[in-house]
Image (cartoon, rainbow, N blue to C red):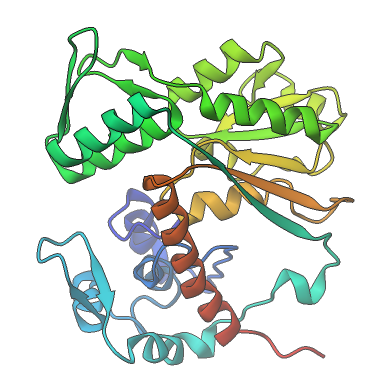
Length: 314
């Protein structure tokens, strides 16, 4: 919650920090997306003693702007080790696998294939940043960021137009989800990122219940909800769902490793009795594969930090 260096939360804490005698920051994902996220946490811990009092100076010292536009930063050679050394004296990492007996965590990538007509749409908008659908609707991606979203929408099975209306394109992920539900033999937890995903899942599976429904968390943990769905941002923190099932599906996959890892932690946590299986629905030869690859790279960065700060075991 303190990774946003310019957030109102961090600014508010900094105002009162001098009056606080002792400050302890706890996090399960301290650098889920990047070591850049450490600055906001440590400015609250030590008021800038280790990573500096200015975020931009911290960033410019240890990173290089490879995009030259301020949106893609890469660590300078040796910077990762230097950051670890600067925070080591006030940081301790206690890995769950060293202290808790958790069941296995299995990851399964389920590849789906876009129909030929949808593949043509995908490739055309990827190349031209513009596509005209059969009904004559023009859908444009004015920049790479918007294009990324459009490609992910196509992979999921739809496209939003300029007015926010949903245009269905295929049901490959819905079909794959149906197979997972049929093979699971028990409750299934589904994470999605687009509102259209939720609408299409509910339309296909009438038993699907949204996590926001009243009393649904308790009902899930009693084993009374066969299919629970929720947005990554609304389900990734603070919910204990380990008593209701052990199978989850990433219907669409977020760029944020923070949300991704926290989502997995809803089932794979203390109290879970069975092996937890995470199914990723991935459109072959699409941006879905890139998102998974980027998440893997981000996890390596965080794991390096956690192991560098690892507490000695008694």
